[in-house]
Length: 276
Image (cartoon, rainbow, N blue to C red; front, top):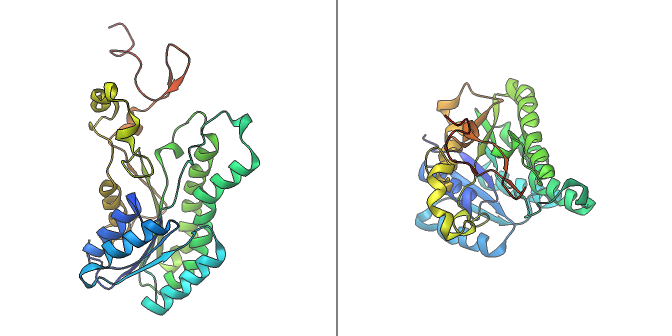
């Protein structure tokens, strides 16, 4: 997991999974650039990651904006000369959860920009820099929802699923250039964006160990460790694939309707449902 003399870009690197990933790469000797849309988070990341002489470039801006991303690529070239690892981390369901027929065009466009559009924009801009690496790697952060249905978040689920097709196809295109392309698909992870421990009512907290087979929700570091594996030399023969980091949730997952008819992915029955 040694990334000494490697250059890494993490989008959405100011908090949560992105910040943990940037820190993990720094801990393994990398030079790290991040882009973060929120000014306060960018300042916090600059202060936190830039301590102890670490080689860090923090840019405050929108990863979905082509002009901003072109400027970011120029700054990375000037600062690091090349890019060895790109982590497309930005993503958000934007708290839009409702029947598809009620989605507006603006909401669909916003979800596209936040979950798929920026992946295209950033990846395309960084390919010339990745081409200078002896062993380039792209890791996109998808979601467990790309691999199962999610009622009322159909547009979010669709864009996350599209990352899989993009990853597989781009992996084939870039293989001759020795650039590997993979994705990581987390289950719900405790982040400022999704503070899951605060979202679950106190009276239901004791159910968490039964909702996730490994007994807890994910941490940003859980996902960061998976990203470092995919980006590093121990995954040198892995490309075009998905790494599922979900505590066993995908293997056990299902969506149900509770007695009131509301959709939930939390168990609503006791036992195995077979009266055995």
